[in-house]
Length: 289
Ligand SMILES: [Fe+2]
Image (tube, rainbow, N blue to C red; front, side):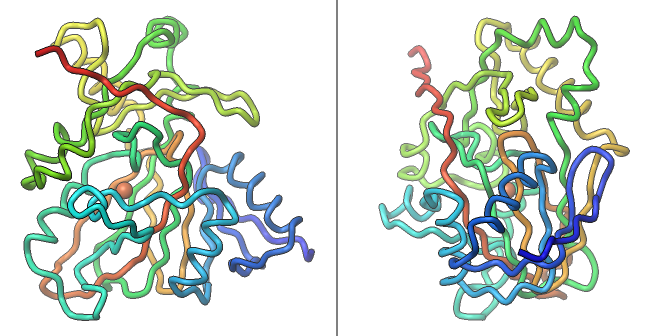
């Protein structure tokens, strides 16, 4: 393997990787390099990739088990491993305004699939068409945020558990289809997660985090908001401006991200996303009647 070049993107996390071609047929040492870099940097950007859906899914399978896209699965039971991000339908025509409204929920800080019983580890997003203005994605690290926390706050959050709830987070933005809602009951995850490779810790919050078990509603909201604000202080945000052909993979176990908006009437935006099922299983939370 010719040694790839690693260009850091932010002091906290993130790296651009040059000299790697993503596909479903990659040498073992290249894949090891990607895995190690991913654990270290949390976000990897690979420019100028010649991907299509078939190649992206094959690459996704090299990283683990692909996750069924939850909207289509929840509404129809149909399994698809792709989500389209942007304002273009799969047939190339413009999507309807309801789709833009639904996707505006992605402009809240979140970790993909934190509301699932088994959240995703990797998200893999490949850009086909991007606006000339806007449409950036912002990222922030809950691992870096944890490292900046005072010791007393680290000890306070260590034993806590958090309820993540898709209907809670998204129904204020756009109606959630009843079948979709029923497929995603609230789940409970530990507040603090430990990376199994290097043992570094992070907390696990974001817009899907509804409440903290055992705290009052107000205490719960205050602490979740405090941790979110702490994570996303402007100096600690990596803002990624997309180029067509770029593939970005990020670690949902420790990063938050959000879209930044764009003029959907003026620009076309189309990216394709796959995800990998993670290793940590939460607990379905039965809300008391
Ligand atoms: Fe997302």
